[in-house]
Length: 73
Image (cartoon, one colour):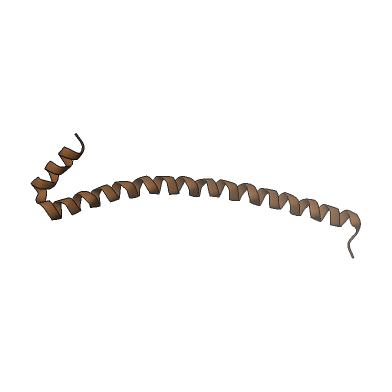
């Protein structure tokens, strides 16, 4: 049988472990959000490449380059 002091010590230890766990999870969550942001930028670049390749497939290389030139002037 445990005494009141042992239960209080066990509760304090558990609260400390939970606090540490929450801090670690918060850091991991921030890392995940950062990776999502970087991945979003990477996906945007991939989308632009795919759009350009679609233009090349539709209009040919020279036609796609002229269209891109006109769009970004």
